[in-house]
Figure 1: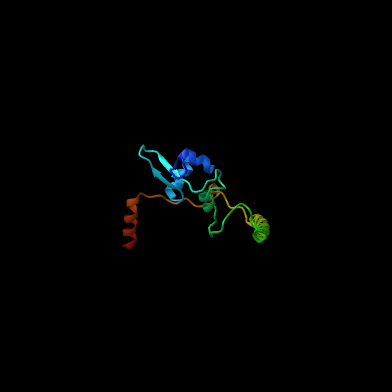
Figure 2: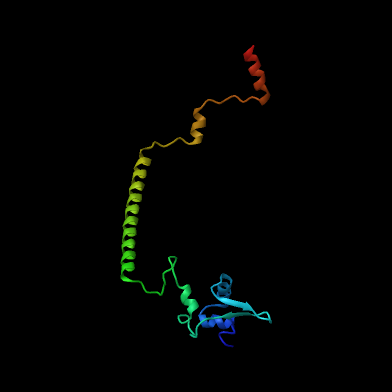
Length: 148
């Protein structure tokens, strides 16, 4: 098959260095041109004559970041310096947060030692006077007697 006539999903996947499912998704997203042949198979049109993932123009077009800059695996010195500065800042912030957590844990431990032990529920019940229990309907009888 020629590249202009189209190739099967499997052939395109081999040429692009990916899987047939990834090629299907690219067709669905519109980043690759594909069509359904008369026999029901999907055929893919690839632009360019290269045979590797780096030589195909479609693959090169997809290697961009969110800002539209081309991503080729290499980072310039300014970007690398900015990333290193960001990593150093985040590491310092993480160390400060960890130190603050340790301080809070120590303060909490001291505060817990100062709090007197609370009595257990069994101790509370024995210290209180028993409350007389009446049936619910006697509440109304007692309230009428108190009103008279």
